[in-house]
Image (tube, rainbow, N blue to C red; front, side, top):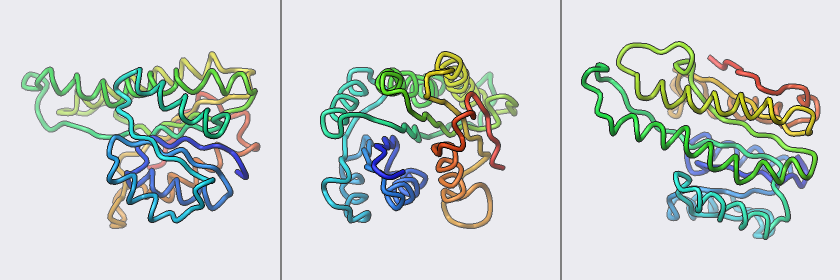
Amino acid sequence: MSERVVVITGATGATGRAAARAFSAQGALLALISHDPARLNALSADLNLPAARFVTCTADLRRIEEAEAAARFVHTRFGRADILLHLVGGWTGGTPFSETPSADLQTMLEQHAWTTFHITRAFTPGMVRNGWGRVIVVSSPLAVAPVARMSAYSMGKAAQEALILALAQELRDTGVTANILQVRAIDVEGAGRGTSPEELTAAMLYLCSEQAARVNGARIPLF
């Protein structure tokens, strides 16, 4: 990862923080994106990296203009982006389909489908021009095997996965790959229930390696 430019969205979440620590330890340059400037400042202090090795950017990726502005900012600072770890999360559920507010579906589509659409459109063209890149998102098995009372979340994740799998087909033979890591739950508390942020990060490091250059359009279960 030495000198690779790694863009991490949702950087202030548990998985984003773990990824930032792991990739910076491998020598990567970090571009940390979140909608919360206070939490970005706290993450910067926690990482304690030289200013030349990272930037932070506050952006609402539900808005295409903010995703594009973030991409311009990263390219101005580092000249390129090599890896995109799109880790914006969130879920809603627990109500029967007949009682699910339309606002729940709108929220899930914005968080999962639209943020993915905007951020990949902003960053992947530059990767293709450079002839190397990695795009990774974290999803859920509910995208392909929905359960009761989770319709809005399942639809949001299904749309996100369809986007990434279609993108992967377009990226074939460009040197850029796009893949999906699926988890049932992220074990933020270390209670042994779900996939830990460190396990997710280990899979990301592999997918970003040269050894994983042929892995493209994959759904990789980590549960």
